Amino acid sequence: MVELSGAPAHGVQVSFATPVTSAREVNAQEQPISPAEVNNGTLVTSFAAYQPRTFALRIGSPSVHLAPFHSEPITLQYDLAAATNDDDKTSDGGFDGKGNAIPAEMLPSQINLDRVRFELAPAKTGAYNAVIAKGQTLALPVGHHNRLYILGASSEGDQQAVFRVDKQPATLKIQSWNGWIGQWDTRLWKSQQEERDWAISANHAPWPPPDFEQREARPRAPRFPEDYAGLQPGYVKPATLAWYASHHHTADELNQPYQYSYLFAHSIDLPAGAHTLTLPDNDKVRILAVSVAEDYPRLTPAVPLYDMLNRTESVTP
View 1: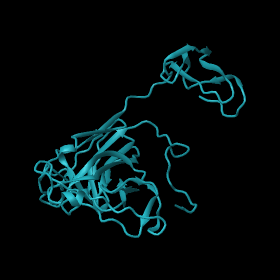
View 2 (view 1 turned 90 degrees about the horizontal axis):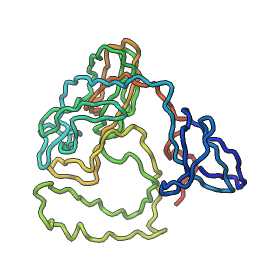
View 3 (view 1 turned 45 degrees about the vertical axis):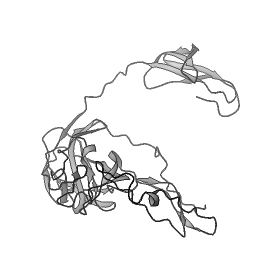
View 4 (view 1 turned 120 degrees about the horizontal axis):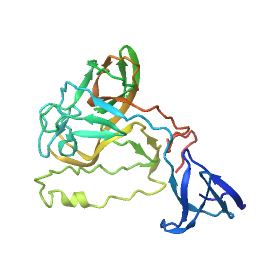
């Protein structure tokens, strides 16, 4: 805590949803300085002008406890081998239909996200572990479920996809499995350097590689302002990132470093007694797992908790 107005503040009271049972003032290393005053479950302190103070608190138990969280995976009929092992070539096009695939050695059998459990099919070359969305209808398990969670990504760019719970539509933006999920403003130059291909075998990489000098050559530095061509605005893609890997596998059986693989989690409200989930009729949407849950009431932040980069003013270098 810090005083920001430049004037002393006396008798400042700080309270929480449950009472403070004990407190002490600490320094930046969290070493104790002195006991702090607690009055009727409230921390009481004072500040000099612009004074920062740090306290370690012990909070009492809440008077109300939430029911245990429960999630349940749904059985899927997989029809796509979306992952490959190192130095293996996919037999049916991989994740994107062009031979690029998720690295099987990095994909777990289970992903836990905010208490939701996703069960994934075994990941290995040639094994089906994803569903191509073609309008299939899935039966939902019986129970007191109020939320449905979908784990997947798009094989080609971000896709608007309409799911249906019974007959009620829910439109989701399914983000791409590759590329970037956010970037700050990027300067563009008239003479862009060619992208270097860093793809390499995981187990049989020659060293030094035949194009070693080309790979290690220092690129020409652009000059400002004569080479400046404009600014690509920054952006943020807001879907919940459930899993990522540092690379993907190429159609040539190589690892492509720093070309990430992503899976995202999306949720849909489930009305009481819902029976079915109908997938979108969009064959660019890949789904690796679906779960239902007896979830806690949803909380919506008053403002985004990160920079959305949705400014309207012009961008200058």
